[in-house]
Length: 405
Image (cartoon, rainbow, N blue to C red; front, side):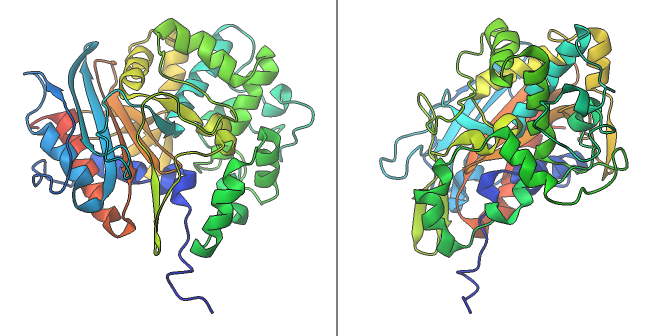
């Protein structure tokens, strides 16, 4: 029998919202359970940052604590207010080999932060009369894609995770022991996954519930949402996001890479810590995430997108109302709209999303009117420090969002 260490499972770097530190931090942030004051960072290599007088004091110290004691290798964040950057900071190193500092304009895998982009495109198509939120998904899927109860599950239920479909990343083929990691590094991480393949994996399992009976977060929903965009427009979802959102907003450092395993431009590296040392997992074929989480971006670009979306610049009033109409998630402090989570915080309700992909974690939250946004990207390192990391991320996010509240 293998010992306990060799049987450890490595799944978080594949990226699931409900299992990510960002998601758990978001839940805790709603409850306001951690004090705003944090200890100064230890053993970090803070990068340059610019602070404006309107920014809450102590943000750099809070960001340093995300990285201190080996909890993470790198962190970067930006706080925007009324369209202007009021603070940006970095901490840690971008590469454990070279010890190069983190750049505030560095790119990262943003994971499920892609979901509000996909939801926005579908809501624009609704406004154009090309589909309805309550249409059955079968009506707008390619003929080769078969979904159980597809004649009942609606487009809206895909976007708010109430269709009951199984999470494909929970399939055993994405679950690895430490002994299996070398094969994943050499072979599996480079493999192409078509959306149809991912859906086929999901529908090979029983659904969580009948459509409309409850909230079950599932990346399968957004893989299907990407296929709906493709069927309705005749173009890949990445092309529609680029045409409708990235170009109009000038998000020049945001991309949807397809099969390209590399992150363009300056970026931090992500690592998986094993009993034998660490391995670099920055490079991966992102088709394993597809329309559910293959996004690459920067803190500045995500803040700009969030401000435009919540500020009403991407959707008409009717579709904006639909975006923010939430369903119960089973948590007293958060609800889910169409690709956005509503969070109750110590200061005011916030909207946003967390993301996780191949060793990168992202938290994007902001005010309902689009006035203030904060983006945090970090690369967890030591699994033994995961709880301390969550507390540090929570402390930073609370301070950035609520200031001295």
